[in-house]
Length: 102
Figure 1 (cartoon, helix red, strand yellow):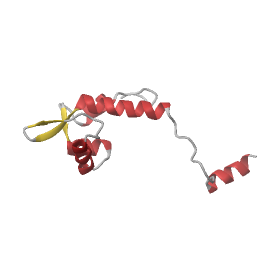
Figure 2: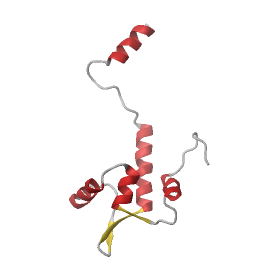
Figure 3: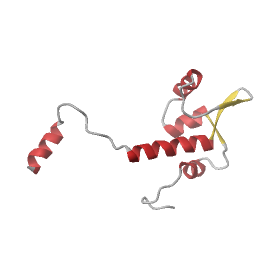
Figure 4: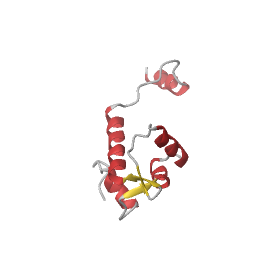
């Protein structure tokens, strides 16, 4: 098992949880990315879902490589673009921390 300092690709993580799987159903993908299955289906039908899917035998599937690439891009974007402070009034915790520090 890799240490927390090493970055593990999403593909390796998916393979650990779903061994011998090359494609995911909408339900499996929903569980993996913490979205509802119906939201995924709605976005796919509207052409707005960021992960490519295909139909085989009347069922919709997502290639595990495309899912892993999407997750890696999301992780890289989160690392490069940390959240900025919200505009507006500071929270009570921020006010107390500022008073204690200075």
